[in-house]
Image (cartoon, rainbow, N blue to C red):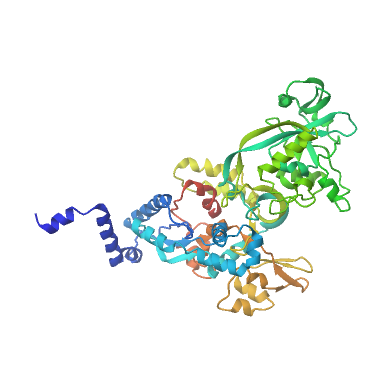
Length: 589
């Protein structure tokens, strides 16, 4: 046998693969597949953007195999499959990596360092492993256009995002509200429900059943249970179900009230009275801790009634004692109840998750540290107010990026009214062809049926700035939907006109607009957008729509709008890992 033939036969699979890859590159086979005639028209593929500040892993290899095979097959069938790559370059994934590089532990350190310098570092960081990703993609034989990839931090991409936000604003779907939202004390920012869904972990927390002394009664107490002992100092009410049966149990010298169905929580005792919850409503008790009571003295909150039993429809007897401890600033149900009945609202905890100076022996301590729960339990026991302590295993949300425990915290945030869009999204979901099929009504459908308003704003630095300006004089709000609109409204248009204009913080923070209502000065709100919004808008923003490339999105005829297809919208094929059903897939819809 000829030596050259023998050498060919003895080549390894890897060597043969490299030869094929070299042939594809030399002959520009991928590029030719895009330029050849496509008798069947366009087949639209969306590439979910990775972040290049981390190395690709084996899960990326698996995903890219699925992403590649269908577009190749459709190309062979006579379709033109434009495969535009993309890079996700904003948000906590990038910021935390830079914080790590700089040795920072808090937002305060970032601000002392300087937002401009920090964001410049973030911009550099996103390309740390670009060559790794390029070689990884090449070696897998994944055909995707990385030379013309979309980059989410580029000004033209940000401008398209602003346009989308303006559409949401004009429809009355973007609003600001003071309410309880998931908050990461470590990162110092709100988190959305879809971010929360990616960060649950099984934990064993200290849970406690505590006694609340009833006013005017000797040795008579309400018993409430909580898995977050750190919220007990902020208690301002107890909640009961009006139709739930409650019993007063004599135990030693004490008389303890709790739900009849949960009486085993306190052990043996003699039931001396039984009533429905409605009979307990209005009864007052002594504050468990004096901190809130003392802090609100002399403030507008002072006159508000607190430390009494209220009725609430969220009370159950599936766990706990059937009496719910209520700390209005640290629970969604608590806050809603407190707003409804006028309970005082006062924060004992700062945004960094530490207790305020007025919190006595807890001042300055991080609420999620187990030592805080231990010391509260010791204090309750010392005062004779502890019924029971236990380790309680449950699923608890953690920050999807830093893995710290989140807390529920009342504050101002911006929201998108996803609850208003729920039925429309459920209807649109029925038009999607899912593989496997059960995702449609299962994991994704269940998510849509329970969809919450999107906590949209982030109190961070490296992200798409929320394009809302607020007048310092009259409070009028303006949402800007393009750089031209910003230039026209700006008191100094030259900043926006500059070829080097960067629509990120801190440059955009310094742009002052003239209020159209009163003529006063309007300043931008300091928040940036949820990073998932960036990738969710890629169908439009990758083409700088609607400022360019309208044919990519809009149907060829206006009468087809809403029913027809543009050249690159909507997608015919998307493939990602299952976790994206509550991440990128959700924000795309």
